[in-house]
Every structure is written in structure tokens, then in C-alpha cells.
Length: 114
Length: 115
Image 1 (cartoon, each protein chain N blue to C red):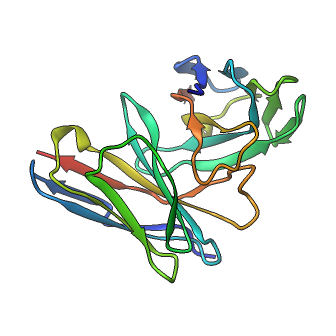
Image 2: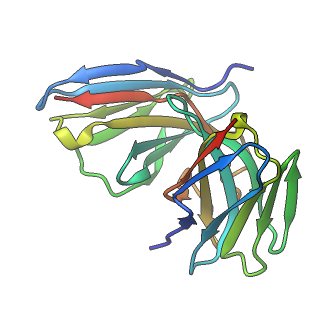
């Protein structure tokens, strides 16, 4: 069974601070994605990383896929209250087509205070 | 382009009843997946349909079932509801060619409360 462990579970910071969320596994994934979910809504895809060592930037968000494709991180620079939400990592197991099935981490609840 | 549409958004049922949830995928997306989200278990995969065929299934009891129609719209049904079925049920569709990367585009969900 593939598991994705996210840390920290909760993060409460002040506007302007930087933060990093981690997503770790003992299994190899062919791709990893990050989603953001706000209360009462479904998760929204932020990014997909597929190559070991890959780094992608989306404005103030930087996503990294580990060299061994077992872990990923999300770094937010100068967090803003609008970044508040549940951040989820999700992965497709190595060697196969997902057929809709992603393994999700438990999520990180981020609160950014003005 | 319209997003994934789920109906109803909220519903309350009592134990033993059954419920049917509906999902219309993004136009052009033929793969539809269903997930259950609870505070304790997070997001758990229920099943996936493509061209009216179930291609993948998660570890849920047979009370959970689904189907897909020729227009790619999908429904899921839960029979003999239990208190533990209270959850946010999310439908997601996938664009063609993303089978290996697995991108999902989620609807806003149907929040089911079982009393």
C-alpha cells in the first residue's frame, strides 16, 4: 500500500512569512500533484511534477519533486491571507496508469493571519 | 469552459435510506472518478469510469456503486446508508492523455449527512 505523509498537519503563520510543506513516502511515484482546497469547495490542481529533481514555480509557490521520486515539497514565499486553505499532495504509483486513482496525503491546513 | 458540476450540493438522509449523486464532467473529459473525503480518512478513491465502463475500484463495500452514461455524465449510489457514510463526495474528471500523470479536475462536492 502506497502512503503519502504530509507535514506539518497544521501551519499558522503571519502574512509575509515563508513556509514549506513536505510530502514523503517510502514508495516511488511516477508523478506527484499538489492541490489546494478551500472550505466548501473541491480541490483545485496547482501543479504536476513528473521528473525526479524537477522544480516548478507558480508565482510565489515553488514545488520540488525529489530525485528518487519519493517525496515533494511546496514552498510559499511571503504568504498572504489568500493562501489560506488545505494543501494536498497526491501521487500516481510508479509504472502504471492511474485510472483515476491517486494516493492523497492527509493534507496541511494553512492559516495566514493578516 | 464549464467546470465539473455536482448535484445536489447538500443532502440529509437517515440510516437505511439510499442516495444518488450526480456529476457532469468538463466537456471533452471522458474519465470520471469519485472520491470520499472525511476528516479522519482524508480523500479515498471510490471508483473510476471511462466510456461507460468501470476501470478501477477502491476498497469500499458493495453498497457503493456507480455508473456512467454515454454523454460521460456519472452517478454514484449508496444504499443502506450508515452514519459513517457522512462525508463530502467529490467527483473529478480527467482530460484525455493524462492517464500517467493523473491530473484530476474536481467538482465542488456533494455533502452528505446521515442521521
